[in-house]
Amino acid sequence: MTHGFGPVAAPDAQIRAAAQQRQAQLTKPGGALGRLEELGNWVAACQGVCPPKQFERARVVVFAGDHGVARHGVSAYPSEVTAQMVANFLGGGAAVNALAVVAGATVRVADISVDTDTDPQIGKHKVRRSSGAVDREDALSTEEVQAALSAGIAIADEEIDAGADLLIAGDMGIGNTTPATVLIATLTDTEPVAAVGRGTGVDDDGWARKVAAIRDAMRRARPVAKDPVELLRVAAGADFAAMAGFLAQAAARRTPVILDGVVVTAAALVAEDLAAGASAWWLAGHRSTEPAHTLALTRLRLEPLLDLNMRLGEGSGALTALPILRAAVATLADMATFAEAGVSTAEPTADDGATSVSGANADTDGDDEGGTSGTAVPSGASDSGTGVSPDADGTVHRSPHTKPDLTK
Image 1 (cartoon, rainbow, N blue to C red):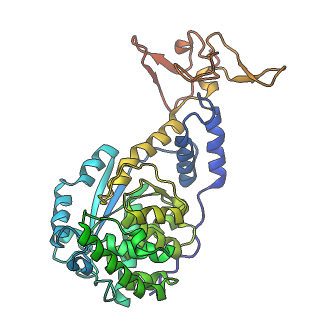
Image 2 (image 1 turned 90 degrees about the vertical axis):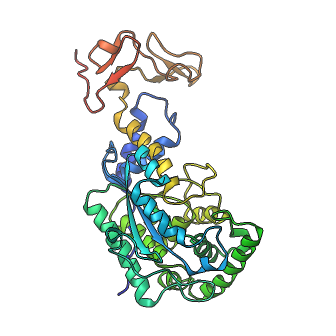
Image 3 (image 1 turned 135 degrees about the horizontal axis):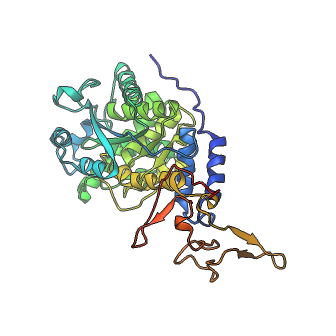
C-alpha cells in the first residue's frame, strides 16, 4: 500500500477576504490587534465560515515511540523514560496534561513504537517495539513504514470523525531529536554541527556523539531524500511516519493544526512532501531552542507564535499558543462592529487628507491609550439599545452573537 495524498486545497480564500472585511468594521483601528487579526482570518478560512467559531474540541495526540539510537549515548536520559512518561501522561501528571486544562484541550496518547508493553487502550495502532538505530540501520521495514503512515491517517480520521475541530500533534520518545535533526538537516541540506542541539540536555561529550550519529544517519538518508516514504523508513521511525500521516490527513480533511517543536515539525516537513500544500493548514505554535527547528520553520515558511526557550515536546509549546489562537477567534467573532455599537468611524478631511472623527468623545491626541484611536464613544450609548450594558464599576457586557436593535 502507498499513500499518495495528492495536492491539498488551501483554506477558503473568499472567506479569508470576508474576515478581513469584517476586521475593518470592528470597533478598533485597522490592524490594531496585530497578528491576532491574521490568525482570526486564518481560522475563518480553515473553517469556511465568517465569523469563525470558537474551538469546541481541541485535541492533542501524543505520538510515543522509542529509538534505537538512544542506546548509543545521544540523550541525557535512558530509553526506559519513554514508557514511564507515557504512564505519567495517562495519569494526568505531565506538562501536556496541565497545559491542556488551561488551553481547553484534551489529550490522547498513542503508543506507536514504545520499547515495552503499555496500557492496551493506547496500543491499538502500535507498529513495533522501538525503531532501529538510524545511524547504523534502517529505522523500519517497508511494511512497517506503511503501517505507521496508515496509523497516523487512521488516528486523524478517528479524531476528526469524533468532532475534533483543532488538532495538535505531540511527541514522546527518548532520543527522538536525533532522527528529527537527521530529517531536517537532510531536507534543508544543512551540516550536522549547524543543526544539532542539546535535546534533553546532553553534555559536551553527548553532543559530540549526537553529531556523529546524525552525520552517519545523514549519509544513509541522502540517497532517499527525494522519496518521503523511503526517508521515513530509512532515517526516521514509526512515530515520525505516524505523525507525518496524521498531519497530512488533517490537512486533507481541512482541519487546522498547531505544530509543536522540532520533532513534530520534522515530521511536518515530510508531510508537506507527501501532501503538497498541507502546510497552509498548520500554525507554528512556538520556536524551540533546537537549531533544527528554526531551519524547519523557515523551510515551511511558518512564523511561530511564541519564542519562550521551550524544548520539552509533548505538545507543550502548541498548547501554550492555543489560548492566543482562541483570543484571535474571540475578537473576530465576538467584537461589535462600529454600526452595532453606535461608534463613529474616522472620516477624511477635505483640506489635507488627514482624518477627523465625528462624535463628542473623539480621541483627538492621536494615541491609542484609553480607548480606540480614531473613533468616538457616544455618551449614553451603553443603554441606548446597542446591546452594551455596563455594571456600576464600568465593566461592559455584551451578548456576542446578538445584534442590537439600532432603530430604538
